[in-house]
Image 1 (spheres, rainbow, N blue to C red):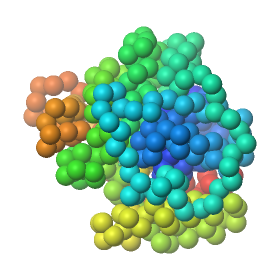
Image 2 (cartoon, rainbow, N blue to C red; image 1 turned 90 degrees about the vertical axis):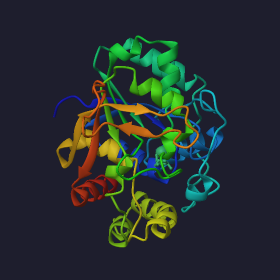
Image 3 (cartoon, rainbow, N blue to C red; image 1 turned 90 degrees about the horizontal axis):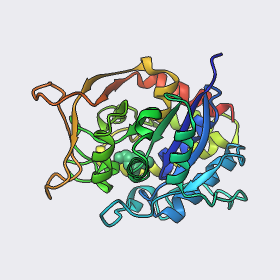
Length: 313
Ligand code: BDR
Ligand code: CA
């Protein structure tokens, strides 16, 4: 097997972030250098706590968890307790973690680790608002040259938004940070709602996690039982979309996805469409391509990969 791919997971857990972290920690193809928490679904005190709970659930108290930004670059934090519950991880009962958060700030960890790495060695997997990543780019613009790529969950074009008619949550919370990342010149792969809305955690799929016979499978089912109820009602589907694990599965089996290299710009000023990802899917502008924008996946294979990985924990 080739050397595992080195990744930093930047995240705001969140039930779907938690599933993404579990899958990453269960995958020998990936070497998780650290987890950087950001405020998003719930405030930072909870996202960093939740990240530690998930590492311990995965049997990986050795993973370093760093606390990052508690507020977006220049806006008030918007959270999503109506989706994720008061704790951000409502559903299962998880013990208070014994592992501590690192004292180093998440942004310093990202800068130091990326600057000390060889060019093209480290990939950032961004599962929440892009505040930490943008702050790292502001602090040390040279990281853009050293990073292999950023794979992120955020945005939506054909599906519209999920927090306003035009905007997806991660981009909406910190549109200025998103604009910095999309204009950074770093190789970017984007998992927007257009693809994650096709990854539905149906009843049968949730039951498959529950019957794995391990605690991680049981917890995954309980997380999804809680998380999906909101979207099932909203969209009227059997199961709600499972967003963030797409970032990790992309690294494991990119051939189950399809998309296009296009230009995407972020709306940062309009009140009506703040945080919109203006995706030039039909290439009607002369703006240059800045990301690979994913639109479709083999959802059956996606869930097979998730269950097969979570079974290993
Ligand atoms: C994104 O927002 C959060 O609620 C989820 O964790 C995911 O990252 C989906 O819009
Ligand atoms: Ca998230």
